[in-house]
Length: 273
Image 1 (cartoon, one colour):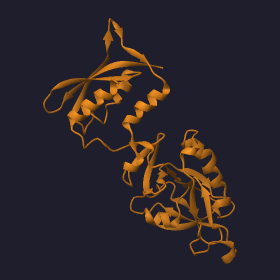
Image 2: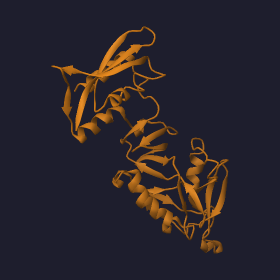
Image 3: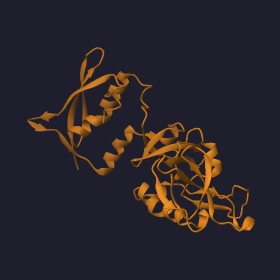
Image 4: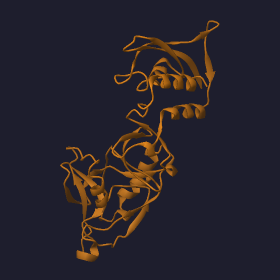
């Protein structure tokens, strides 16, 4: 894999001072993009004036780079998930996820995208096709084939009426419980109007109480709770636990605490090592 050295031209919005930053990247656009949100952008102090290749002896300056090196350099623009405040949206393998809570054993995320399926033939999540799908096909997809990134956690299947017939289940991915829906109420967006209802893992009741294995609690688009039959098809926004030191892309700007001069110096240092 080859990368080329690019000169990215910048102009300070207030003073009109010009400077050039040298960036290694495969293409012109990728070189420019590396500075977007850091030095270039509506909330940044500089505006972009152009990007062009760097020449030496009438030839473009290039280097060979391994995929491992490329991933390492990309990580410079990422942030440990433990540094992200609950309620913020981050990118996990390109998938937008909400940070719900920092726990002792990791950070709990929730996918903002819908997984639309029926719950199953009963309201026991431990034995449901929904659990099988989330911890199989879905897990492999969202981790891009690295399911060990996600930490196994214990999910409480206590029913609304307090029945503990279903106990708990160990899994990597699951919708939220009723208690978690209440706990994260202040940061959890409601389901969109189209879907109207979102599965939780909490059953309405269990067979040992009233011979009822059919109903599951969930969240409505107006933020209220209701129940639906487990055989029906609705969406869920799965939650999963990742290590707190896992590096993710933050939609906010974590570099705001640094001065422009410090950013310019650091970008130059990293792009030329």
